[in-house]
Image (cartoon, rainbow, N blue to C red; front, side, top):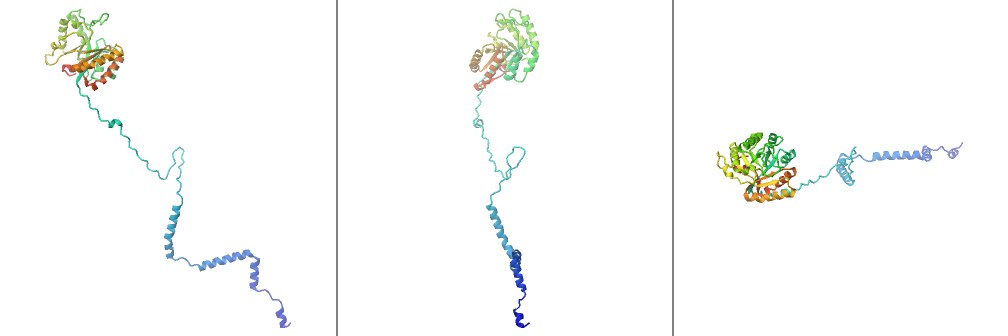
Length: 344
């Protein structure tokens, strides 16, 4: 074959043309290889950051983070779920203002000055020891300065005297005496104007022996008939006072009390007369009227003895209410013995 013939003969394909043909026929592989080559080129062409650049970038990043945190909405507080019905727990509870309590109006009101004492009054409750309910009412409602007269017929006169005995209280013995009113039985120990001096003296001693030195003196009821027999009564009263007891006379009979003076101290009178008699057995209106009428008597005399006879629970309660009003009128409640100059 000639040289010309060798040039015209077909030649085998080159390596490049074979590679290009392969990538054309396989686009997926060619894309992957192209991406890999690009990544390698970029990795080698971008220089690594220097330490100075990193240091300069830190404040900028911190500032950006702070700004982002400020722009984000605040997180809602978590709610504490418990078995009971307590309120949701919050991260921060605002302080509650403390309101100071208001000063009571009474504290702002100026104190009312006490009314000066212008008169003294003694209150004597009679027939004590005959009714348990009356005795309880006296103990619960009346002050210790209220005097009592225990009946010589009391169920337990010694026990009654012990129950009421306390500082500031007078305890008298209410003796049994024949009444001036008809139809009243005074009992077997009663003194009487129809009996002799010796008989009456013996009965009086028997009554006094019931309480002995537990009493400050004897109380003569308002309806006693023996005081009217002056000569006999004067002799008996002198003996009573000589024994160290006082006499409180509730009758209307005139008695020369100045005659009955303690020989040991001439300015002490041992014979007292009552000034006002209040009947506890009357109606509530009549009882209140008598109590109201007693006020001017006390204020005019400056010293007065008020006696409550026939006491009941209701009358004791009404008298206790009356006693509570005395201080506002300038009246001081004192034991009856205060008017003798003796200590109760």
